[in-house]
Amino acid sequence: MKPRLSVITLAVDDLERALRFYRDGLGLRTPGIIGQEFESGAVAFFDLQPGLKLAIWPRESLARDSGLPPAGPGSGFTLGHNVASPGEVDAVMAQAEGAGGVVVKAARETFWGGYAGYFRDPDGHLWEVVWNPAMMPEE
Image 1 (cartoon, rainbow, N blue to C red):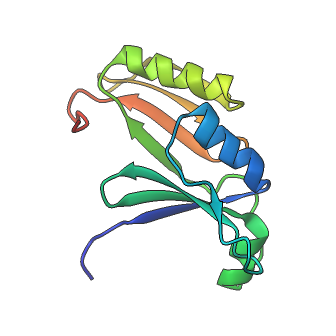
Image 2 (spheres, rainbow, N blue to C red; image 1 turned 90 degrees about the horizontal axis):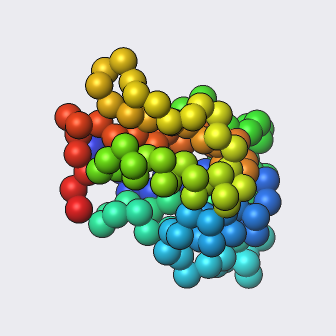
């Protein structure tokens, strides 16, 4: 297997609400909800970076497609968003909170020399916004 990640799919409780959070609140680009003509097919995709997309799909649709019972809010993992400065961490955290996200750990200096905070999206998915001087994002 070649190590390649092309889509991160988040199960959501309310597709329209999640769309507003990611598109309107966080400013991610998307063509909007597609696939509504298919049973359990409605989904929205957001461009993250070349070759990587974020998908939001109703929790029940994902459960039906996978054959597993619906998972609860959040999933025991975080999505990391690496930014170029501590100030950008603060700006993204404020943007997420203004869009309806919940700050679960205010941004602060880390023990390893960085700066980071955590927020949950409206469906409970945990995001870490981090400035890591050893891992600067490519622009």
